[in-house]
Amino acid sequence: MDGRDWKKFLLPYEQAVEELKVKFKTLRGELKSREEYAPIEFVTGRVKKISSVLEKAKRLSVPMDQLESGIEDIAGIRIMCQFVEDTESLAELIRSRQDMSVVYEKDYITNKKPSGYRSFHIIIEYPVQTALGMKKILAEVQIRTLAMNFWATIEHSLNYKYKEQLPVEVRARLSKAAEAAYQLDQEMSSIRGEIVASQRMFEDNSNLINRVLSNIQELYFYHRVREAAQFQLRFNEIWETEEGLSDLSADIEAAISRAKKGDNN
Ligand SMILES: Nc1nc2c(ncn2[C@@H]2O[C@H](COP(=O)(O)OP(=O)(O)OP(=O)(O)O)[C@@H](O)[C@H]2O)c(=O)[nH]1
Ligand SMILES: Nc1ncnc2c1ncn2[C@@H]1O[C@H](COP(=O)(O)OP(=O)(O)OP(=O)(O)O)[C@@H](O)[C@H]1O
Image 1 (cartoon, rainbow, N blue to C red):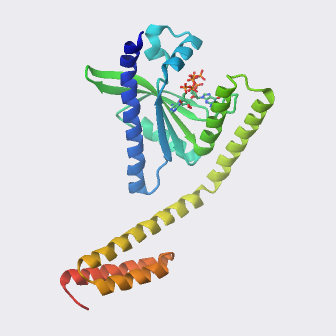
Image 2: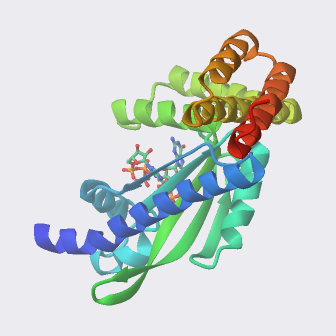
């Protein structure tokens, strides 16, 4: 394949990565606004470089005319989660989607790789609508916690630097670090309930702050300048207290409703 052929070959993979990134980011936003908690922290994606496709094809003895079926991660998506439990919920969400189908799964969370690597991989088949019609391609979705990602990112860059010839003592320390990352995930899971509850409270509070501030602006709109200024002063004093905020919010909403009716009391 020459440069132009590669460009054409990679086009549907590029399209798939872009679409899948948007879909999973949108899913995060939607779940956040519906349930105030999403099992997705952030999403990345990449199309494998030509050199990396060629190296992998050579390593796995995949003939050049079978790259599409022989290399499953030319299109790759990675989804980071806060907690191990989230990786399971997310896998379930992916299994239930109608715009992609699961080909198979690799559970490196339960069964870590000898290097210490942990992640849940799902190979999916994803239909891309191209100018020439629909084309189904394979893509790899890696699901991992932030701690797993931290470890894998550093291990990957060390392996890259040492060209897979990591000194024995570095390998041993990486293995210990993988165990520490695993312990961190376990520990975080055990206090997950508490963390989720406090995140929800924090979000409730920031939503309330936004509402109060925009309601104060609305009072200005109704020319209730003095009242709005008084509410602003009260806000400055109590914005950090949840109870004070709720009371203030109720008072401002009553003032808006009076203003709408043209009532001056
Ligand atoms: N950092 C890191 N990433 C890994 C490791 N093992 C697998 N991965 C990631 O997971 C992907 C798929 O790995 P595997 O499930 O082992 O699949 P594979 O394509 O048969 O295996 P490879 O020959 O490792 O590419 C790799 O392309 C990496 O992105 C590891 O030990 N360290
Ligand atoms: N599914 C994925 N989603 C997002 N990024 C990925 C994914 N898989 C790999 N990457 C990242 O893409 C970059 C290039 O990796 P590349 O595909 O060349 O190698 P690899 O995945 O580590 O190994 P292999 O060639 O064995 O599949 C790395 O930073 C890697 O972490």
